[in-house]
Amino acid sequence: MEENIRQIKPLSLVGIKPNELVGKIPEFRWIDPNKLFIEEKYQRNISQRSIVLIRKSITDWSWLKMKPPICSVNEDGKIVIIDGQHTAIAGASHPRVKKILIVVVDAKNISERAEAFLGHNKDRIQITSMQMFYASLVAGDPISIKVKSVCDKAKVNICKTQPYKWEVGDTVAIVCIKRLVAEIGEEKSFNVLKILRDARRAPVVQIEITAVKLLLYPKNGISQVNQFDLSTVIMEKDQKEWLGKAQIRSAQQKIKTTDALSIIWKERLQKGISYAGSYQENKSVRR
Image 1 (cartoon, rainbow, N blue to C red):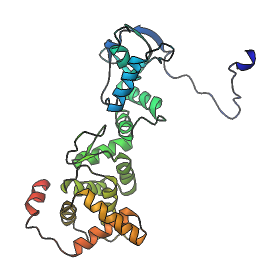
Image 2 (cartoon, rainbow, N blue to C red):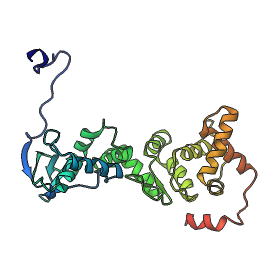
Image 3 (cartoon, one colour):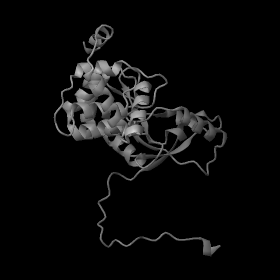
Image 4 (tube, rainbow, N blue to C red):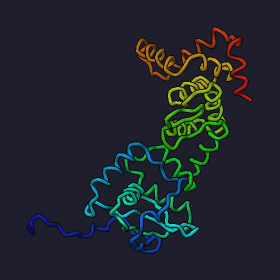
């Protein structure tokens, strides 16, 4: 048996300098999980996949597998979960679980708690880019604040999770939008997103964001595209139709699908726009 057990030993500190310890030493508490709370500003909503996992935890509850949720006391004296809400919900749902063990850390405000949430979850596959974005936003990340401001101005809604039904302006393309803002700035990013919002896209997707950017802000710096005309053209067909055409052109010309889509839209713009059917609808969106 001794051959299969290994004692923990410290690593060499050559080349690194340990930091000063941050925060107070955590404390452990046994608590009724029904008395715990979730801060929705940075925590993710429960998805169908989450419900499946929670139900499995209820049927397979074992103290051997239970990891204590990381919690903190908020400004109102409520104990809020930073990490481990699935465990807490499973415990609250199990009729034989009266209390669970939690670790209470000292996080003085919601920004610190959101930052702690990021620290616990940034390397976990199940945390989506949208959830990470909202946690970064609450933590005060300047890039996320810029992105949110651009989206709000363009009336584009960054969904925390994929909704059952898309509404006009909804998006989960947060990685693409963050890259857009970084590459072309806030004002130009607003123009790109507004065109798609005016085209009543539901959702606003990555391929169309990129295609609009290519048309409005080409590498040569010269664009003759009228933004209202472009939104009108985009609105002529749904996303599946435009994507199908782009994929065919992409295969024929051996170019990226986003490049193909921008070329198709440019060709359509060159044919001219008839506003007889679509003008009033698009005009109402722009108000």
